[in-house]
Amino acid sequence: MTPLIHMPIDAIAKPEGPPLVEMRGLKTHFFTDDGVVKAVEGVDLDVYANRTLCILGESGCGKSIMARSILRIVDAPGRIVEGSIIYRAEDGRTVNLAEARPGSKALREVRGQDIAMIFQEPMSSLGPITKIGKQIIEALLLHRNMSKAEAKEAAIEMLVKVGIPKPAERFEAYPFELSGGMRQRAMIAMALSCQPRLLIADEPTTALDVTTQAQILDLIAELQEELSMGVMLITHDLGVVAEVAEDVAVMYMGRVVEKGDVYSIFENPQHPYTQALLESVPHIGGTRRARLPAIRGMVPHPLARPSGCPFRTRCDHVIAGVCDVTEPELQKVGDSAVACHLHSTTEAADV
Image 1 (cartoon, helix red, strand yellow):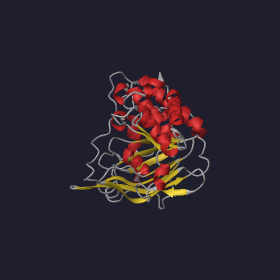
Image 2: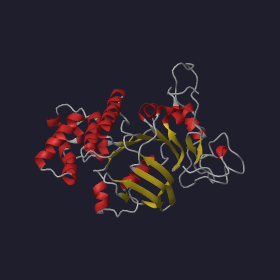
Image 3: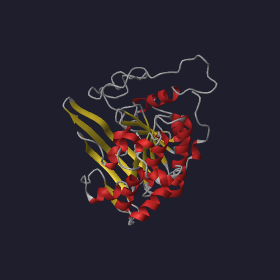
């Protein structure tokens, strides 16, 4: 397998200090008439300041629901049923967002101010009949001690920062009057208007042309450096991950199956699912008519989860009597943490 990146593993420095957000045993389920959909099933993840954590996985693996769980914006009939989401505020206090009451002061203070989110499709996330400027200053008036005039000035400055031309005019525009790229930039401006400590970006470059994708990713990187914020980036694009990530987590059917720094994951993937994802990426210099490897089968229906390892129905390395019986736990393997019976040890390491 030709690697996507060519740098030494020790090029990634270890994170400094405690994580901004620490998830332990997070479970988010949807209670439907047909049964319980376990969208997120025991996720353990840490997000650090001034670092980018990329979440990888096929559609339906629980990436977006996990991110929405942090802000407690999972739509009914979904709800967090177990686990903790510990947020460490700038003053050192901690808040368990998983236990915070919906609409509580503690949650309102964090949401939008300390933790902000860029949604996948801005046209469905922006209010269609409210001007862009009004939607941006709403957050400023709610979380920062500003007058309307000061909020308008700050909003226009943010529109300048995200690269929107004629920002004073765009301030008065409706979302449908902007192109897809400008709507995405407006949403980034809204998310960053309160200078959050953590930015969650759910596939922020989906459906955008390559040039606009690069501009938006560069913009997020610049603002991350300026504000020293943590970034959780959800994406399908392995090229983007190789470019921007320090840390990577691979999800499958609501569980993290492998996590580590970007060089460990790309140069020496340990889980068969991670290996299959990387092998399916086209490489320069390959045979012109060669078919790309594909992961066989389909992601199982969420109401019909396989027993044991959830990936065993598509895995080429199944161990009979083991993979179909016991679900593997994350354990330390080299520089990564992997949930796979191929790497089972007598005692799982603390990860």
